[in-house]
Length: 378
Image (cartoon, rainbow, N blue to C red; front, side, top):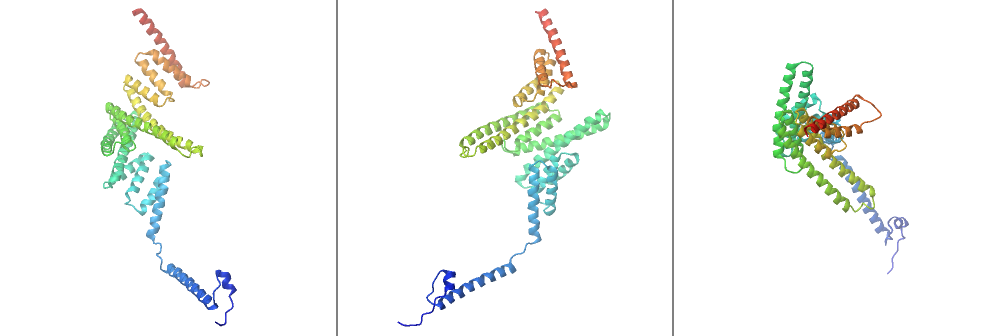
C-alpha cells in the first residue's frame, strides 16, 4: 500500500505529548480544543452578565450578622456598653429580631446604671410574645431588672433617710418593695419553667429569690432558697471535679502536649471556682442581714459555711469573733479576733488596726471577768 505520508508536527508533539498519524488529525484535535476554550470563555461572559447581583437586602443581612457577632464578642468580654452599641446597629436593620432584642436588653441590664435599668425594664416588658425557647430568658432578665431596681431604690431610700429627707426616703422604699415583689413573682416563674439541671437558669433564679426575700424581710425563705442553690452548686462542683479527672486521665495528647493538660485543668478549676464564689457571695449577703437583725447564732453558722468555701476571706474571722463575743463566748471571740489581727500588715498602723487591737484588749478584760465570776460561783 502506497501513499504520501505527511510529515510529523513537532509543535503538536511538544504540546500534547502525542504523535498524530496525520497532520489533519492533529488539526482536528486542535480545533476541538479551541471550540472548548471558546465555549468556556463564553460561559464566563454569560455568567458575569446574568449572575445574581448583591442586593441591598443581602448587604443589610451581612451587616446585621456582623453587628450581632461584634455585640456577642463584647458581651462575652463583659463590655456591655459596646455590646449595646452593636446591638442597636443590628436592631436598626432588623428591629423585630427577638434574640437580638433580648441580647440588647441584657446588655442594658448588666450595665446596671439607673437609666440603663429603666431602659432594660422597658425592653423586657415590651417583649410579650416571644418564642418558647426565649421566654424563660426574657422572664429571668426582667426579674433581674426588677431586683436591681429594687436594690437601687433601697440604697437611695437609705441615703435620703440619712439626709433627713424622710418623706422621699419612705416613697423610695415603697417603690423598692414593689419592684422586689414583682421580681419574686417572675423568679418563681423561672424556677417552675426551668428543668432541674444546675446548668440552667434555675440556680441563678434561686439566688435572685434570696436577694428579693432579704429586701422584703422574708429571711427564713431567703435561707431556704440559698440552701437550694447551695445544693445545686455542690452538685456542680462535684460534677466538674469528676469530669476533670476523667478527661485528664483519658486525654490522648497529654504526653505529646503537656500544656494541653494544664489548660484543661485551668478551665475546670475556673468552673469550680465560679460555683464557689457565687455561693459564698449570696451567703455573705445573708450574713450581713443576720448580723443586722442580731441573729448571731445563725450568723455564726453562715460564717462557718462561707469560711469552708473561701478560707482566704480573713474578714469572716472578725465577723464571727464579734458574734461569739456578743453571745458571751469571749474565749472563741478572742481567738478569732487575734487570728484576724495576725492577717493585718503589722508594719502599718491604721484606724482599723487600732480598733482591732482595742477590741482584743476589751475581750481579754471581759474574758478575765467572766472567769473570775465562774470561779466565785464554782
